[in-house]
Image (cartoon, rainbow, N blue to C red):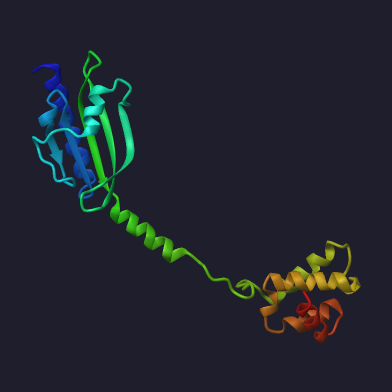
Length: 206
C-alpha cells in the first residue's frame, strides 16, 4: 500500500464517523483529486444527488489549480437543486510532498434549522407595548419602601417633600407600575401627606 492509498483508507474512517454522527442532515464526501473526472471514492449520506464515481466540482478544480486556495474552507453557504439551503466545509489533503491529492467535503442541510429559527423568532418577539408598565412584583410594602427610598434621595421625609418633589415621586411610582396596586392612591396619600385627589391630579399631569 502506497502513501496515497493509506491516506484515502484513513480518511474513509473519518467520512463514516462524521456522516453517521450527523445523519440525516449531513453528506460527507471523500474526493481522490488525482482523478478529477471520477473523484468521489466514498460518500456517507446523500444531499446533492451525487454518487461514487462522480467528478469533482468547480471548487475542487480550483483547489487543484490555485496555489493560494485555503486548505480549509469552512461553513460557506450553498444550495441544493430544490432550493434548500445548506452549508459546506471543504478540506484539502496533501501528501508528504505538499501536493493536494484529496479532499474531504462536508455538506449540512440547514433548511430545517432555518425554519426552526424563524419559528422561535416569531414565538419570542414582543411587538406590542402595554399602555402602562405592569409591575408583577409590586406590593404595598414595596410601595412604602420605594417612597421612603425616593424621599431619602432629597434627604427629606416623605411629608416634607416639596410639591414638585412629590410630583416627581408619583411619576416614578407610576413608571414602575405601583399605581396599579389596590389601595395605592390611599397609601401614597397617607405617606406623602396629601389627598387622594391630589395623587390622581399629579399622575394625570405629566
